[in-house]
Image: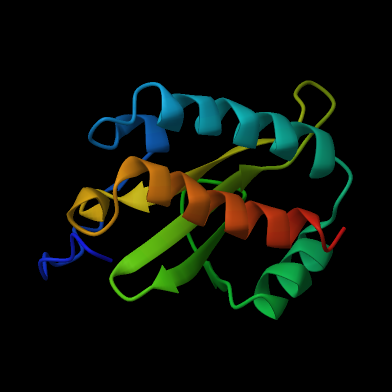
Length: 126
């Protein structure tokens, strides 16, 4: 956390593509993450997902999504996974989000790595 300057969390969430200098690398991660969610999370129940998220340290929280879990990846560096479950009209969808203060702690390359680690742990449990 070479960039860490003590900036407090904002409580505002953004995609990797919205991180400073994240348009290309972060945007690509956002697209890949959405594809993984569509393919791997389409048949899972909320109970199964809750169990798996808690097993890797996730804290279930409320939001406008069907399912939201917060992962405190590093101090002052939470990741928020928001999911909407599949229904008869739409496939599962979702996003992995960062607090708006994220670029005060990690550069985009490291932020993407943090996101990959969380997604790989979660997907590896299915």
